Length: 602
Image 1 (cartoon, one colour):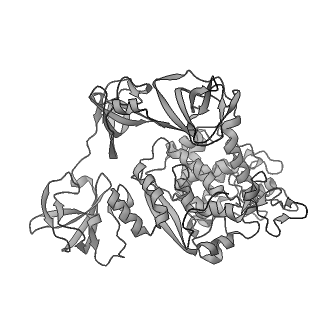
Image 2: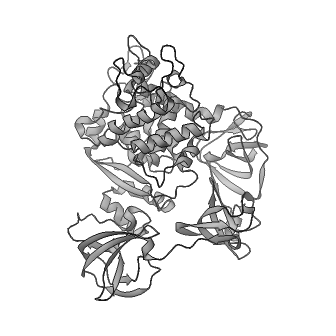
Image 3: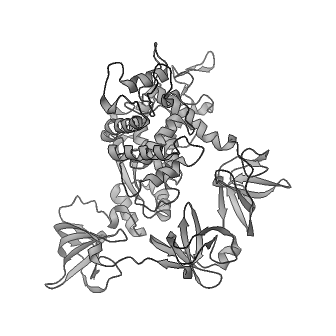
């Protein structure tokens, strides 16, 4: 994981990742699904290549600009299951990749079906009759988007009145979302028994913040109201109960003969820090609670608009302000030390530094670092360091907590990542090794998987993981730890020399790594002990060491590739494509004296 080799490999693999979908060779595209009613779409990224059919191997017909609106005539899927949209382009039928298009529902569709009522949290259901058609909207007139088998379990995220005036459920099945008629689904009831809730002893004095506050017979609004307590009244909280919805309720003696429950967000525990934690610890909050949560966390106003958007889409997610204690300009100045942040030589000139040592004004040439990279300009470093630029669904994962959590990390989430782009780790053995490495090191195995993909590429092939490199046969180094060029060894040789024991027979981190399993397990252990325990437990803080004081900024950073954190986060996102219905924790850095608005990308 040395700075030199990792910046080189990560940036190279980042470039590969960005262009892979453009140059991959695919077989003939599948059969087109035609919309019963046309839909409108807006190009999210551009200029976007338009192809003659659904796949990157097909003839390029031209490009279409970002922000352009198209009328979608149908869809097709390529070999990897990627959706492509068909539309009229210069009097011909053209295709664009679906992930770069935001589809809008037509007024006809929106007026035909009722308003969606979302469930928070989602409900579980079982298909009673099958195979059951899944529709794109609530009604049989809408196109089929798939089928679910009889007795299949589905996640129900909401309901809507269909064109037939009946109730339809919006469900998640695999990586897709669609609608099924409610009469064919058995909804699993959530137990209301308090014995099924998670209860933790508290025994603290507390005061009612808002009142009169309803007191319930159990931990939830579905329980009967037994009375109320006035604002300012003191109570003794006996325990806190987390119900099936993830809400935290406080249990107390309402009377000499009755126990009562009040929602924790309206109660202040005496002797607490004063930073009030709304119910659910930041998860599943209503709008008012979320506003209180952001303020209590210390998020500046310039963060809040984007956080509100994310919260609305993912109410389960938890956003925590990571107070760095650093002044923005002081931190940025440290990060501009020559060679600490690099960009591709093909990057725009505005991304490259012309500071002394980075650029020769007499020759007009940029200095090469690590063989070919160029020093990053202050503006592009500021852009990638400004967390406000990445509070979006596609980029938020660089702030995800890297600690192990069985609730949202398992072999299926790893499978979701490696089951694409002909990934070399798409085998049962690799998936088991990756998962076990995460469990044993207490590191999120999805994070480990994304890191290996960044280091080795989707298809692998490096001498560091082949096991057949001359002089080091039978040794592996999936994380490229210690792999950098010296006067006597190339990067591959040195990485395998380190994996073997660094010439001294070193046994730390389970060395020698003479099996794939040992390489993955040892690399995860190395990452855990060197980064997670050093307040660098997100991709962002692994790249920018900002949680250990100003003196440590620009030191002990995992890579020099300026965009590395965002790139790894985008790979990690694949783990949650099938379902993101988890209380995922995101640690978002906050600095003092930040610019009033997000730093623009030059």
